[in-house]
Length: 310
Image (cartoon, rainbow, N blue to C red; front, side, top):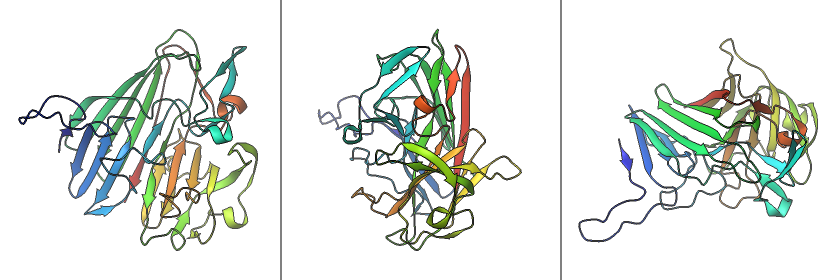
């Protein structure tokens, strides 16, 4: 498998080929597994096994809808009013969720990443996040995707600036399910607690999982509408927490103490057709609450791995 160019020269017929909205298409293969990674955002566009979709992805000619497979750096989820304070200085980010007055899902989703390494079953993409008024820090970012007994992703960030910077990471894969709705699918989220959120999607408290939000033992999703952040994750002897959706398992190493589950009810292109299971290093609004927030000192690096076993 190769890289289908996202930009470049003129064809033999003198026509400049159209550039896909998601940029270059980085194709990986191992046995009957197939993955397409995009150079725009270094996200996951598709993942299939033996022709069966493991991810509910999107087409090559589409603009990535609803965050599908996107990498969320330097924060996942939301920042209230797009505003935060660090070292006595207040910063203002663009409000890219204007209806809720939030900044959402970081700054690299729509940036072009360099394909630094590419093998048949492995790819490394890199990007330097340069300072902006709302985030005046410099990060060297690297994501490595590998196919083997499943798909794994390793995300690294190094502070290559001169000042400490706030940092968080996440990713937004939608897991495909059998049938056309998630209602009949069995879900297992091995979590002790769930965050309570307000109408803006911002956490206002934390409580033990209970009732319709208790998936600490596997059970059908039913009519439960999920847009919830779980924590207090139970881990196996290898340090990984495992979220199961039907026959598919998404695992997270110890770098990810939070995981979102989202059935996409308000989104017409999702509408309970699949479920997003989102590893996160910090809680929503962590730049203000500090819950799970990482402060990277100059030269310091953070990394974390997650993956899918189909």
